[in-house]
Image (cartoon, rainbow, N blue to C red):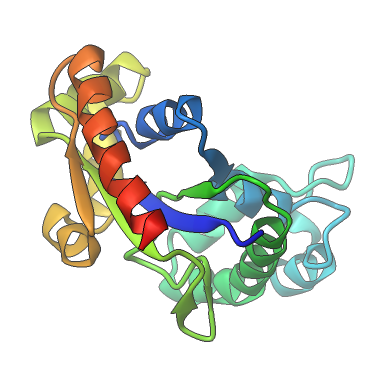
Length: 204
């Protein structure tokens, strides 16, 4: 069975994962694209040796696993180094997502992905693996507040937000926008309305 696939994205602190969890309770299957990205760095992955060859053994922990913090310091301070890493990891992520979607038995699969606008993730030769895009939004103040509750300092929260696409950029690719500024109950009601739209998409 071919699953209907939706790319779900939103800025940090907008509540994207909460929305994904609610969709899951309604019967959708959810794939966390960040988790798939982490699996590309595992010792058992095909990409592991390419990453070490590119960035040297300095990025390894004593047990041979990749030290994500050490790798992060290299790539996030250099666009050239980040591009090198993405050239290795993105094809691996896209290949894994294609395989996972082919095995899905659920009628609807949500790709919970922080990076949709910024990078060609969940795409094969420029063609998205998802048919529709849902964007989760929240006000700037609400996002900062949520991140601070998670223990993220305000300066770091601002830096992370500024490194991502803007609300305007995300809206340009959105088929549906969910606003998450209020209570969880209001969010759940809003998603029930969205569910009806999603069901119409699947039946088209």
